[in-house]
Length: 193
Image 1 (cartoon, helix red, strand yellow):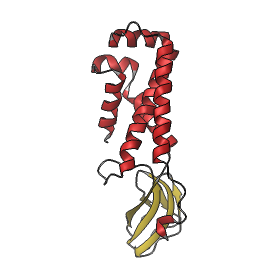
Image 2: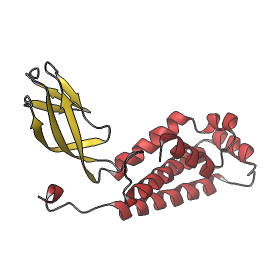
Image 3: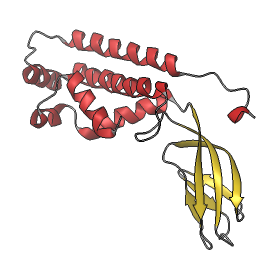
Image 4: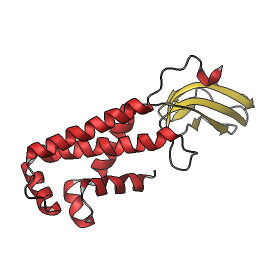
């Protein structure tokens, strides 16, 4: 799912389909933060590969945006200077002497949009939405003004703060169940070596 699809799924499930009103209760930045927190809680599970390229004089090379841990790098041409992983960059300790290429073996989060999706990716996306919904309903239950605004916006005047807490708990349980379904045991060897 793309970022927009995740946000749309969240807003529909939260009952916030009016774009003008939902900004007061669940701004995109908050929802994206909750989704990112879910990704961190789900953790990396995919063993992936990517091609890396660098030019002579380069001081770093960008890693894939979902790279959590580098397992190994197999140089296919040129030579790779000594390097360290810093966030999403492989920083060279000295400039590259020549152009080069390598295959990166790494652990990453669930597949991002555009990749060939692993069946677990759909569950991971759903888990992200469930987690965001649990955070949203907890936020509503904790703030009387947000709770009243939500009841007004959705037309659910009979809903109580305890109902919102229970709803948050339900979404948290769904999230935990989905995480259990997509979790893998530690592989005995990385990439079947």
